[in-house]
Length: 258
Image (tube, rainbow, N blue to C red; front, side, top):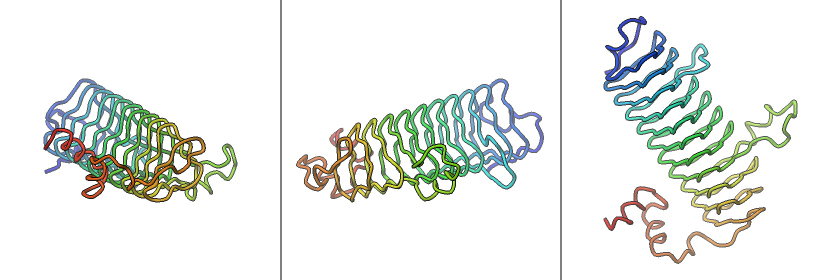
Protein backbone atom coordinates (compact mmCIF):
# COMPACT_ATOMS: atom_id res chain seq x y z
CA UNK A 1 0.00 0.00 0.00
CA UNK A 2 1.43 3.39 -0.99
CA UNK A 3 1.94 6.16 1.57
CA UNK A 4 1.60 9.84 0.78
CA UNK A 5 4.31 12.13 2.12
CA UNK A 6 2.58 15.14 3.64
CA UNK A 7 5.43 16.89 5.43
CA UNK A 8 9.17 17.03 4.90
CA UNK A 9 9.87 15.37 8.25
CA UNK A 10 11.13 11.91 9.17
CA UNK A 11 11.43 10.97 5.51
CA UNK A 12 13.34 7.83 6.39
CA UNK A 13 10.13 6.32 7.72
CA UNK A 14 8.69 6.19 4.20
CA UNK A 15 11.56 4.30 2.56
CA UNK A 16 13.33 0.98 2.88
CA UNK A 17 16.69 2.75 2.43
CA UNK A 18 17.25 6.49 2.44
CA UNK A 19 20.53 8.06 1.30
CA UNK A 20 22.11 11.35 2.29
CA UNK A 21 20.95 14.79 1.12
CA UNK A 22 17.74 13.65 -0.58
CA UNK A 23 14.98 16.19 -1.27
CA UNK A 24 11.40 14.90 -1.37
CA UNK A 25 8.56 17.33 -1.99
CA UNK A 26 5.22 16.98 -0.15
CA UNK A 27 2.54 15.03 -1.97
CA UNK A 28 4.81 12.24 -3.21
CA UNK A 29 3.30 8.74 -2.86
CA UNK A 30 5.63 5.86 -2.07
CA UNK A 31 4.97 2.11 -2.19
CA UNK A 32 6.49 -0.61 -0.04
CA UNK A 33 10.17 -1.50 -0.19
CA UNK A 34 11.36 1.64 -2.01
CA UNK A 35 15.09 2.43 -1.72
CA UNK A 36 16.80 5.76 -2.39
CA UNK A 37 20.48 6.48 -2.97
CA UNK A 38 22.18 9.78 -2.16
CA UNK A 39 21.20 13.22 -3.55
CA UNK A 40 17.86 12.03 -4.97
CA UNK A 41 15.36 14.76 -5.90
CA UNK A 42 11.65 13.92 -6.17
CA UNK A 43 9.17 16.67 -7.03
CA UNK A 44 5.48 16.69 -6.09
CA UNK A 45 2.79 14.63 -7.85
CA UNK A 46 5.09 11.63 -8.20
CA UNK A 47 3.78 8.14 -7.41
CA UNK A 48 6.33 5.37 -6.87
CA UNK A 49 5.26 1.71 -6.89
CA UNK A 50 6.47 -1.13 -4.68
CA UNK A 51 10.04 -2.43 -4.65
CA UNK A 52 11.53 0.42 -6.68
CA UNK A 53 15.28 1.04 -6.37
CA UNK A 54 16.58 4.52 -7.13
CA UNK A 55 20.31 5.19 -7.26
CA UNK A 56 22.30 8.36 -6.51
CA UNK A 57 21.53 11.75 -8.11
CA UNK A 58 18.26 10.66 -9.74
CA UNK A 59 15.57 13.28 -10.42
CA UNK A 60 11.89 12.35 -10.69
CA UNK A 61 9.05 14.65 -11.76
CA UNK A 62 11.37 17.38 -13.05
CA UNK A 63 9.76 20.54 -14.44
CA UNK A 64 6.54 19.98 -12.47
CA UNK A 65 3.36 21.46 -13.87
CA UNK A 66 -0.10 21.62 -12.36
CA UNK A 67 -2.18 18.60 -13.25
CA UNK A 68 0.76 16.50 -14.46
CA UNK A 69 1.23 13.30 -12.49
CA UNK A 70 4.36 11.17 -12.77
CA UNK A 71 4.10 7.42 -12.11
CA UNK A 72 6.91 4.91 -11.61
CA UNK A 73 5.77 1.27 -11.83
CA UNK A 74 6.64 -1.47 -9.38
CA UNK A 75 9.98 -3.29 -9.46
CA UNK A 76 11.63 -0.47 -11.41
CA UNK A 77 15.40 0.07 -11.22
CA UNK A 78 16.74 3.57 -11.96
CA UNK A 79 20.51 3.99 -12.08
CA UNK A 80 22.57 7.03 -11.10
CA UNK A 81 22.09 10.41 -12.72
CA UNK A 82 18.87 9.52 -14.56
CA UNK A 83 16.04 12.05 -14.97
CA UNK A 84 12.31 11.49 -15.53
CA UNK A 85 10.30 14.64 -16.18
CA UNK A 86 6.77 15.36 -15.03
CA UNK A 87 3.73 13.76 -16.61
CA UNK A 88 5.57 10.60 -17.63
CA UNK A 89 4.01 7.20 -16.89
CA UNK A 90 6.36 4.23 -16.42
CA UNK A 91 5.15 0.61 -16.32
CA UNK A 92 6.46 -2.18 -14.10
CA UNK A 93 9.86 -3.88 -14.29
CA UNK A 94 11.47 -0.87 -15.96
CA UNK A 95 15.26 -0.52 -16.01
CA UNK A 96 16.78 2.91 -16.70
CA UNK A 97 20.51 3.28 -17.24
CA UNK A 98 22.80 5.92 -15.78
CA UNK A 99 22.34 9.49 -17.06
CA UNK A 100 19.37 8.54 -19.26
CA UNK A 101 16.57 11.08 -19.67
CA UNK A 102 12.82 10.78 -20.31
CA UNK A 103 11.09 14.05 -21.02
CA UNK A 104 7.57 15.14 -20.17
CA UNK A 105 4.29 13.37 -20.98
CA UNK A 106 5.83 10.17 -22.29
CA UNK A 107 4.40 6.68 -21.75
CA UNK A 108 6.54 3.58 -21.20
CA UNK A 109 5.08 0.06 -20.99
CA UNK A 110 6.10 -2.94 -18.88
CA UNK A 111 9.44 -4.79 -19.02
CA UNK A 112 11.35 -2.03 -20.81
CA UNK A 113 15.12 -1.47 -20.69
CA UNK A 114 16.57 1.96 -21.49
CA UNK A 115 20.36 1.99 -21.75
CA UNK A 116 22.75 4.48 -20.21
CA UNK A 117 22.98 7.93 -21.75
CA UNK A 118 19.82 7.48 -23.82
CA UNK A 119 17.26 10.25 -24.29
CA UNK A 120 13.52 9.90 -24.82
CA UNK A 121 11.71 13.05 -25.91
CA UNK A 122 8.33 14.42 -24.87
CA UNK A 123 5.02 12.79 -25.83
CA UNK A 124 6.73 9.53 -26.82
CA UNK A 125 4.86 6.22 -26.61
CA UNK A 126 6.89 3.07 -25.91
CA UNK A 127 5.25 -0.36 -25.73
CA UNK A 128 6.12 -3.35 -23.54
CA UNK A 129 9.08 -5.73 -23.74
CA UNK A 130 11.26 -3.12 -25.45
CA UNK A 131 15.04 -2.87 -25.25
CA UNK A 132 16.81 0.35 -26.14
CA UNK A 133 20.55 0.05 -25.82
CA UNK A 134 23.02 2.74 -24.71
CA UNK A 135 23.03 6.26 -26.19
CA UNK A 136 19.80 5.92 -28.16
CA UNK A 137 18.01 9.15 -29.13
CA UNK A 138 14.22 9.06 -29.59
CA UNK A 139 12.66 12.51 -30.17
CA UNK A 140 9.21 13.94 -29.44
CA UNK A 141 6.11 12.14 -30.74
CA UNK A 142 7.88 8.92 -31.71
CA UNK A 143 5.92 5.67 -31.29
CA UNK A 144 7.74 2.43 -30.46
CA UNK A 145 5.76 -0.83 -30.50
CA UNK A 146 5.92 -3.93 -28.32
CA UNK A 147 8.83 -6.42 -28.42
CA UNK A 148 11.10 -4.03 -30.31
CA UNK A 149 14.88 -3.60 -30.11
CA UNK A 150 17.00 -0.52 -30.78
CA UNK A 151 20.75 -1.04 -30.79
CA UNK A 152 23.32 1.37 -29.34
CA UNK A 153 23.63 4.83 -30.88
CA UNK A 154 20.41 4.59 -32.88
CA UNK A 155 19.18 8.09 -33.77
CA UNK A 156 15.55 8.83 -34.64
CA UNK A 157 14.70 12.25 -36.11
CA UNK A 158 11.47 14.20 -36.39
CA UNK A 159 12.38 17.58 -37.89
CA UNK A 160 12.27 18.02 -41.65
CA UNK A 161 13.59 21.59 -41.60
CA UNK A 162 15.64 22.46 -38.49
CA UNK A 163 15.19 25.98 -37.13
CA UNK A 164 11.96 26.43 -39.08
CA UNK A 165 9.61 28.77 -37.11
CA UNK A 166 6.73 26.34 -37.72
CA UNK A 167 8.63 23.27 -36.57
CA UNK A 168 6.26 22.54 -33.67
CA UNK A 169 3.31 22.48 -36.05
CA UNK A 170 4.95 19.69 -38.03
CA UNK A 171 6.60 17.49 -35.40
CA UNK A 172 3.41 15.71 -34.23
CA UNK A 173 2.87 14.68 -37.86
CA UNK A 174 6.47 13.66 -38.55
CA UNK A 175 7.09 11.43 -35.54
CA UNK A 176 8.59 8.08 -36.56
CA UNK A 177 6.61 4.89 -35.90
CA UNK A 178 8.48 1.68 -35.08
CA UNK A 179 6.00 -1.20 -35.14
CA UNK A 180 5.87 -4.39 -33.05
CA UNK A 181 8.83 -6.81 -33.20
CA UNK A 182 10.96 -4.47 -35.31
CA UNK A 183 14.75 -4.46 -34.84
CA UNK A 184 16.92 -1.41 -35.53
CA UNK A 185 20.64 -2.16 -35.61
CA UNK A 186 23.42 -0.19 -33.93
CA UNK A 187 24.22 3.26 -35.28
CA UNK A 188 21.23 3.48 -37.60
CA UNK A 189 19.58 6.78 -38.50
CA UNK A 190 15.81 7.04 -39.03
CA UNK A 191 14.58 10.14 -40.88
CA UNK A 192 11.24 11.90 -40.13
CA UNK A 193 7.82 10.75 -41.34
CA UNK A 194 8.76 7.10 -41.78
CA UNK A 195 7.35 3.85 -40.41
CA UNK A 196 9.33 0.70 -39.64
CA UNK A 197 6.90 -2.17 -40.25
CA UNK A 198 6.21 -5.12 -37.97
CA UNK A 199 9.02 -7.71 -37.80
CA UNK A 200 11.28 -5.55 -39.99
CA UNK A 201 15.06 -5.51 -39.45
CA UNK A 202 17.23 -2.46 -40.09
CA UNK A 203 20.89 -3.40 -40.44
CA UNK A 204 23.55 -1.64 -38.37
CA UNK A 205 24.63 1.74 -39.68
CA UNK A 206 21.72 2.12 -42.09
CA UNK A 207 20.16 5.46 -43.05
CA UNK A 208 16.42 4.98 -43.49
CA UNK A 209 14.80 7.73 -45.59
CA UNK A 210 11.49 6.05 -46.42
CA UNK A 211 9.05 3.67 -44.72
CA UNK A 212 9.97 -0.01 -44.45
CA UNK A 213 7.39 -2.70 -45.18
CA UNK A 214 6.68 -5.41 -42.58
CA UNK A 215 9.11 -8.38 -42.55
CA UNK A 216 11.67 -6.49 -44.65
CA UNK A 217 15.42 -6.60 -44.02
CA UNK A 218 17.09 -3.36 -45.11
CA UNK A 219 20.72 -2.20 -45.05
CA UNK A 220 22.83 0.63 -46.41
CA UNK A 221 22.73 4.37 -47.07
CA UNK A 222 20.07 4.88 -48.17
CA UNK A 223 18.64 1.68 -46.73
CA UNK A 224 17.37 -0.82 -49.31
CA UNK A 225 15.57 -4.13 -48.94
CA UNK A 226 17.79 -7.18 -49.39
CA UNK A 227 15.62 -9.98 -48.03
CA UNK A 228 12.40 -10.98 -46.32
CA UNK A 229 12.71 -11.95 -42.66
CA UNK A 230 10.74 -15.13 -43.36
CA UNK A 231 13.43 -16.21 -45.83
CA UNK A 232 16.19 -16.29 -43.22
CA UNK A 233 17.66 -19.79 -43.17
CA UNK A 234 18.87 -19.75 -39.57
CA UNK A 235 16.83 -22.51 -37.82
CA UNK A 236 16.95 -20.58 -34.56
CA UNK A 237 15.41 -17.50 -36.15
CA UNK A 238 12.72 -19.49 -37.99
CA UNK A 239 11.64 -21.21 -34.78
CA UNK A 240 11.35 -17.88 -33.02
CA UNK A 241 9.29 -16.37 -35.82
CA UNK A 242 6.82 -19.24 -35.49
CA UNK A 243 6.51 -18.85 -31.72
CA UNK A 244 7.07 -15.23 -30.75
CA UNK A 245 9.45 -13.38 -33.08
CA UNK A 246 12.53 -11.77 -31.55
CA UNK A 247 11.38 -12.13 -27.97
CA UNK A 248 14.65 -11.52 -26.14
CA UNK A 249 13.74 -13.87 -23.32
CA UNK A 250 12.95 -16.71 -25.72
CA UNK A 251 16.28 -16.20 -27.46
CA UNK A 252 18.12 -16.36 -24.14
CA UNK A 253 16.32 -19.54 -23.08
CA UNK A 254 17.05 -21.24 -26.40
CA UNK A 255 20.72 -20.30 -26.21
CA UNK A 256 20.82 -21.95 -22.81
CA UNK A 257 19.25 -25.08 -24.27
CA UNK A 258 16.03 -24.80 -22.28
